Image (cartoon, rainbow, N blue to C red; front, top):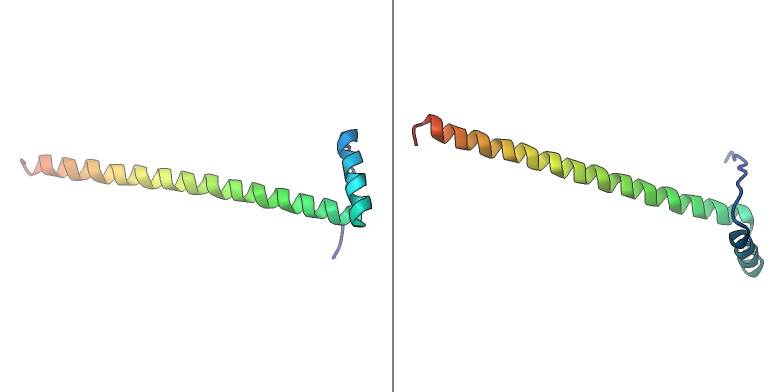
Length: 80
């Protein structure tokens, strides 16, 4: 797999915690950063899907509302 090198500045307390965890777990920085970014992307994609589902639901309710209005109008047109 091809890779890309990223550079980022993080707060010193976070960097110190990261260094301590990596020292305890004997994991490479690349693995930790890849897992963290993957988890963040997954979470953001889920949020986006939830927002799209909510929008679709709202649009569906709006269509249903128009159907009710059309039905009510059809009753008036029949003289009822």
